[in-house]
Length: 196
Image 1 (cartoon, rainbow, N blue to C red):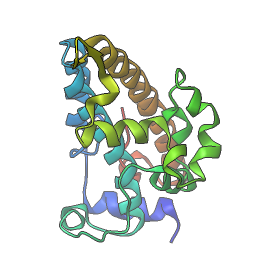
Image 2: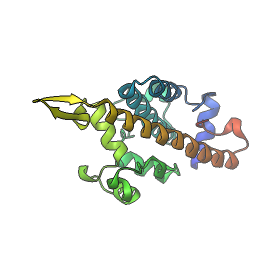
Image 3: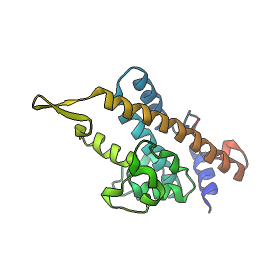
């Protein structure tokens, strides 16, 4: 069974209708965009990173024929968290992961080449950002002033706004990827869910 057939089967089983049309994922993007608009930049980063991570993982779960309602209960589902490995696996099924590159990060200039490595020093910017923020390492936004570290809101703001742009581009690329799968199936109602 090819990827399109697996997705068609899953979609028939779980008729989904959402902006990202993965009901479990869409709120992360919606709330992330709202947080940017309201100046809640750390929350925006958390939401958008989680939305991107989930939208990368769900197609791979579907590819493994796992019911997502049960898959999250298992610790060994076979789909990694946001990492170079996850990005490689998503690229292998045709997801346009190259749009997740951060232009202002010189280390991301070799984005696709660096994905081939599991070396922590060659992680994609989005992977480093996820790991730092989700593990509470806000030192990336901290500078010493008068003997104490202070978090610089402007640095978090820049990161959140670029992440928002990356997330929007990701949604567009994901939608094009999905449209290609629709063309391989017998219509949009049988194709996998897509980003709007």
